[in-house]
Length: 239
Ligand SMILES: Nc1ncnc2c1ncn2[C@@H]1O[C@H](COP(=O)(O)OP(=O)(O)OP(=O)(O)O)[C@@H](O)[C@H]1O
Image 1 (cartoon, rainbow, N blue to C red):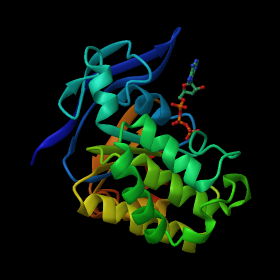
Image 2: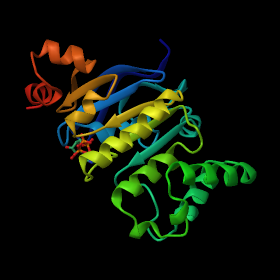
Image 3: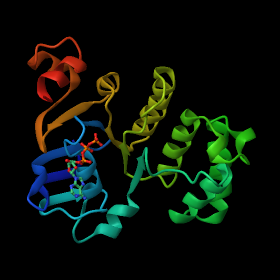
């Protein structure tokens, strides 16, 4: 299997505090990789490094074949990023947000129009194209935020708690979009606090206090920890 992310001995310190304590792992092309851990375990810190938004204290990290120290701009071109906190502009309309992201990602104007029409149709948001983001239900915002994060067809999309705060049905629908992206060859790197979502991942890593304590398929983790579900696995690992 082709590796699309390789992390070797990644350390990130904030002063004397170690937020990422010697992380080593690989992510394979097309995989849905779950990055789990309790609050403060160090997930966001690691994701920011993988996206080229922050420098590690030490370690080797390659994303989409590029070194995150030396080829940060190339990394950024090949990835999409969505977090609960940073996504759409609330005071712009749906269409304006799509246009903005298309511009940022350098999609040619001619292709932009066609892709926007396609996207609005797929999300069943054609009638909402001129509505402000602020007035949309959270589930719609999340679907749109995800869609613009992969609008430029990146190799990898990083999702930091993408489904926070929405109901189980909306979350399940959101995961249909994740599966679709993965089936189109986009590698999905996702953090979540919902253990039903951990079950949807191909492989899952579980962090505790800056370290990766376990990394395997949900089925193997359940077997190893003699657990009925991922909730039990998580509780046994993350104290
Ligand atoms: N800029 C910073 N300066 C100092 N400490 C930081 C900084 N950023 C993060 N930390 C600390 O590093 C630790 C890991 O934080 P991080 O946000 O990576 O955790 P997380 O696993 O993403 O948590 P959550 O699930 O709550 O988002 C926390 O203790 C946090 O306080």
